[in-house]
Image (cartoon, rainbow, N blue to C red; front, side, top):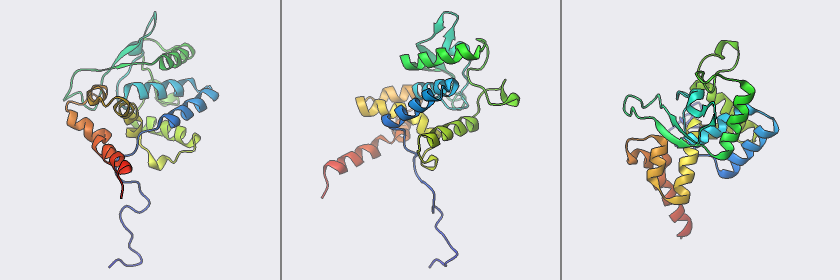
Length: 207
């Protein structure tokens, strides 16, 4: 029997997979960042959604742009999985993402050889954006949209677009390629397809 001083390990915590953002939540965050004219944050948010990258993934300006303009197809080198999968992950940037990147690059005047997204402040201005810095930014976007940050994590951001693709098309292979997973079983586990399908069946067929 638990004493009064004892508490359960998960009290006040969200356990299990953190959910992806919904299309309405994505639209809300985009609207807020546009209203604030936060060019860097809007470009970063859009880029993170389209490519499902992590904060630790290495992205230079030349990966997304040439002197002629912003690329539509980009390659992301995934730092976390580079020892298991040496091939870069390809992704398509939407027209909205390309527009936001164009505005950000014009305003920031970053050189092609430089990092696309760097840390904040003089100390970090020449270093690549880190995982923890991306999380702090993502947390601030959630708070501005009046979403509880404790319910989400960086994997929510990474999982959003592949989950949307799967829900709309049922194409798990496309989600696997975007995430850069070597195994389709890893993708099924990562975006929780079986759990989502079970919940949908339960919604339709209940006692």
